[in-house]
Image 1 (cartoon, rainbow, N blue to C red):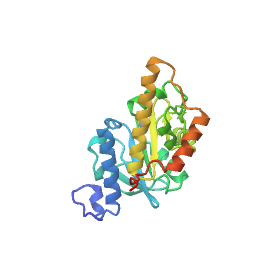
Image 2 (cartoon, rainbow, N blue to C red; image 1 turned 45 degrees about the vertical axis):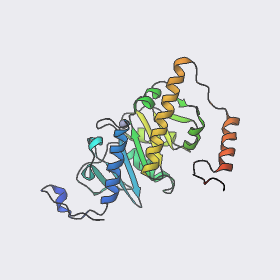
Image 3 (cartoon, rainbow, N blue to C red; image 1 turned 180 degrees about the horizontal axis):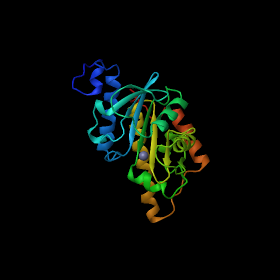
Image 4 (spheres, rainbow, N blue to C red; image 1 turned 90 degrees about the vertical axis):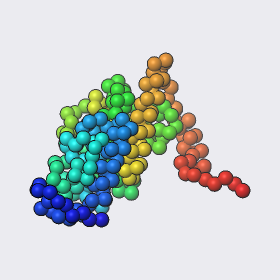
Length: 236
Ligand SMILES: [Zn+2]
């Protein structure tokens, strides 16, 4: 899909958008996450990879109102391929994650300052497996140590925290969730916030009791047998 762009800004020098649909899908994902309350104002960022390019929200974009123009396309080294706005200050975090993972497993990244996950990041070093649904994210979620936003140190810390996981928390900062596509990354970001909510509610009345290794293994074995997460027709 291509779009002939008008207007008098610099981007109008490039009259054809080669990545319009990818940028549009990142904008739509940003608006959806804002509607769910996970992205607030300009805080947070979203990216999606296709081949050797990544569409990512621009720094300073109001995510609830994001449009195609608020999404910039870069290559895997971070050089701008398309768009007129500077990409998010967390570009190194997004590119580090997307370069490290096989694209069929991870092709979208959502970073939020969602309130419940961020609240837990002030207290925990790790969110233990509090519900079996958490196993779809890979198990206990690590809390990456604090570094200033947008730094290579933060990108490296988050990358390490994500090892073998589809989500992580970021100390005194927020959360990050990955998926094979934007829909999957949104689903995982919502799951992280739901798990954080669960933990917070439980912690009001006692010390949350995580699932132990044997319980987790039993769930994984059972889910594998049933094909958990896919729909099945009732037997005739
Ligand atoms: Zn942030």
